[in-house]
Amino acid sequence: MSMFFSFTLLSLLITALFGWGAFVIVLLRIDPFTTPLLAVPLLLITLFLACLGTFTLVLSWLGNKLSKISPYPFRTALRQAILLSLFLVVIVLFFCLHVFNFWNLLLTFLVFFLMELSCWPKKRAD
Image 1: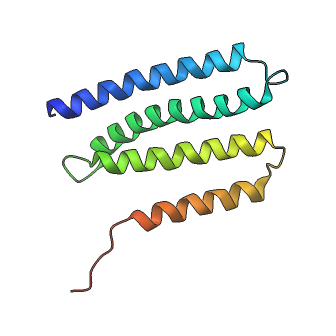
Image 2: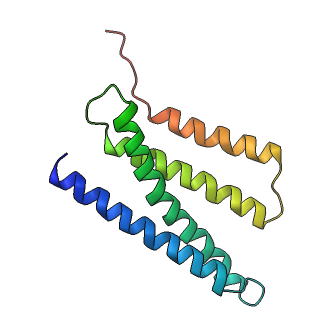
């Protein structure tokens, strides 16, 4: 592993730990009934940052373990982690707005799946 990649993974680990710590602090210390305009966005932002760091670490590790490509592209893991974190935040937002049901989950999954599918490399018919 290169020095830059090790530094990036260490930075992501620290960011994920800070993100989860901030998420727990927001969850336990800020009352959403007294300050809903502050609590809900802060909760969603910290959830996104915590999940982003965690999913990036997990996906890059899984990619390096399971991939046939020798150095698994870090950009791919980061893109997938961003989409997965956004999907999770949108689902939690649906819960907060009381509009969550199976069909919303299915349509949201379909949208994020199509976004990921559009990023896959195209095979040329040469």
